Image (cartoon, rainbow, N blue to C red; front, side):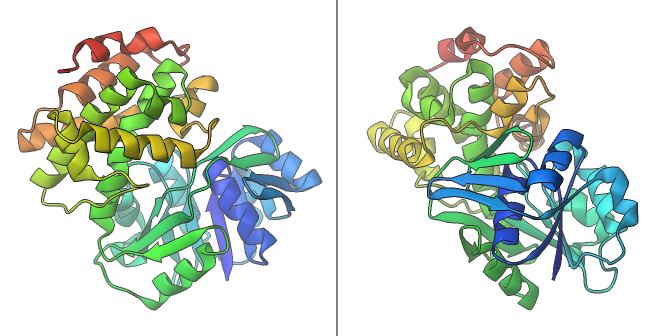
Length: 343
């Protein structure tokens, strides 16, 4: 099996590096030239809670893809949501047109975008629960110590042979499970992302701090509850992610079972590690465009379609868009959100 991974940042680098370390044929494709050069020269260092590994996946720049002599068996899409279409179209040209398939390893819900380019029959989804970062060329870090790293699923809920094979492959990186409810799992993960990612980027706090500082945590609960309401209105069944129950998050937003939810968030913070930052926070540090439109913005859009109010998600989107690209983190950015809290 030849695995092509477009996007060799934190998540793509950890996955690709550890797969390569365990003997898989991996090619990392990335547009950060310094990163590619460092991997070619010295290998890719993957730091985890259990140790550091020097791995040797093949690394190429996007312009070098045209030198690819054989098709990839499977292509992992691990780019930012706003790069989904062009990255998928690019990898389509280098993935086996007969038996090849594509796996969405992104934040947000981009599966249908990928399927529109390559076909639903060639599309598989993966929900990621590991945390990772990439802050210097040639080195990636897995920041969490959750046992479960992935849930993989077909769009139609089938348990196919390729899904079983993919699941086995990913177990070389972290524990992986097959799901028959990809869409419910996607919305459940979106809840977790919307509760922490933008808040971390705006304030400069780590994921752990977002879950432990009381007023920030309470804003996160309101954001998450809105995601749950929209998902339920759309007919999805939600699942617990990293010990966080969607139903209890919605209760907590209404003033019920607050202590239970806060304790589960504190436990998630402990398991997530003290210094981990979501990709949104990393984008702010690097002065890059964020994925706000594809996370909280997606919830706002779907909420409007279903006539479900999403005031907290609406406001956090407004704040990020108003600040623009390249802003500096500051806890003062979320002052209005804190003032909106009902308790």
